[in-house]
Image 1: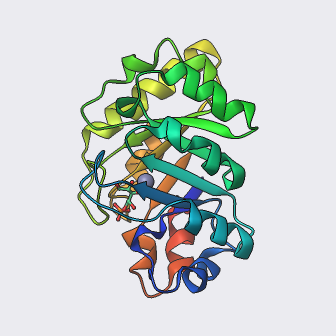
Image 2: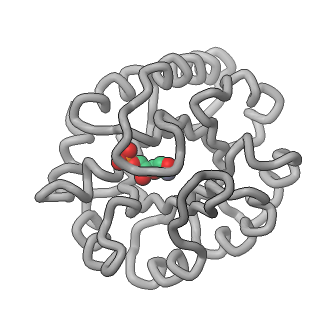
Length: 212
Ligand code: DX5
Ligand code: ZN
């Protein structure tokens, strides 16, 4: 099981020290990019991503919760291993995915809780992963929406049936009470913000999500 701690719940005055706490045990570092339009919150942009790239060996997973992601993907591809764009945020998803992949970056598509997985049918062969939002995006520390499990199961069955290899990532409300169900449903990457960075021992919190 892979775990991607989200620095949305880390110390904004010292990201570097919090990142060091999970560097040995995490698989990705998840960056939540919010623009105050696509979601009702503001976080940080590519300046922070570039700076983090210099101080960590962890691959960066940039989750763009922004309108007009096409204006920003080139910048994020420079330092990210995975760039995730929302299905709901762009008119030309196919073109956007091709642009990300041309930069040798993995392209993931995120689905909000109300968006059915069927929407991805015509693009699923082109993408490297699907991010299932298990909360409404915008804030850390929210409660896991159980219907996300049905969506994960549906995707996992679909990829098995067709022999596809895209990854499934889940984001929002992942903690000691919810992670097992997500893994059983078929998820490959768990994003966890508050569970990791609000805990006394972030490294141990990451390790605990890998134990099943
Ligand atoms: C929410 C973000 C998440 C957030 C998860 O919009 O996409 O990545 O950091 O936070 P927790 O794990 O606290 O629900
Ligand atoms: Zn996220």
